Length: 425
Image 1 (tube, rainbow, N blue to C red):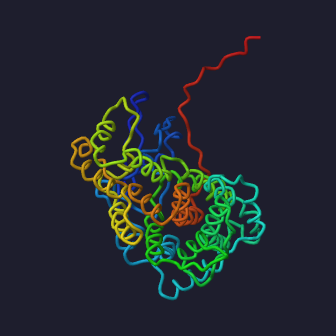
Image 2: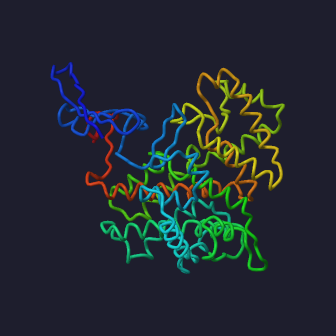
Image 3: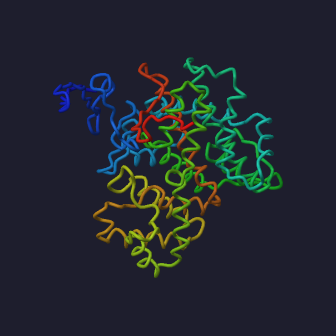
């Protein structure tokens, strides 16, 4: 990280102040405003933190103009093609891809932490039969801290790593239990002889009364989707995990906060909205009418799955997901919504309105179609996102805990309320 200086002139006082400027490996340089208020009496104002770097990180880089996403320097396209989700998890946490021996070690460690305490299974009985799986996931993940007092010292590196592995291992078990509770079926215990995604599919769809055979197409598709969702720099949920973690709270609570943030329809719930939109459009012949509605400022209708806060080019994950979608639907039968989605994409990308605004399909545009084809109900879509994104949350929490400059997060504000006044009696 190289350093330069920028000079700030205050016209009110006539004073000038030098602020450090840092250049990372890639991306825009950042101005260090840590001492801005102490030097000038000013704060910065940045709603939504669109121009603020909240931390220094070595984990993920994305270039919105180029449509590029790197995990620890590796392009997402290469990782999705050549690596498993657990290898990518190891990469995010440790900084390097695992050797064959390290891969076996991480697979064994995750596999043998998949069981959850029997008392946790009792928790699900307290939820209404139709409770949203994200509500159950948030609550049960937070409650994990009540069961592992032996490894909750956040200042102990060994405890931190053990907790990281436990979290990733138990999330699919909790997610599948939430699904089983909702549909009224018996919980299925994890099996140590299955892969991470194979085990999840087993816990979701197996029943005690019959054998369940895991489809390798579904297993591979889910593994790749988890890789694509694993991290995405300082997004809302990751920033939430970091902010909660900055207080020194336990990692289960910090990740539960991230799950709650992901639940928002503007974040992890967008793929559900895409399917709802495709259902509303209904037929290819209606596309022109709905595109016209999307352009109308007075119409609340939006084309879901297009555009991104950061990407101003194709989301690289969307290209990979589109290919997966073809493979999955070849196996599970065609979904008319896929044909509709491809036609919608084709028409929109030739329209000047979308071209000028750089509104390209994002990661949510096709993922819901895949999840639906694999048998997941819509209320589980964000849960699946959470399982994949947990790899990034854990990596960022570990990185933050190792940062000697770590401070409790405390944003400032621009107060525009009433001036001081007295109670009139």
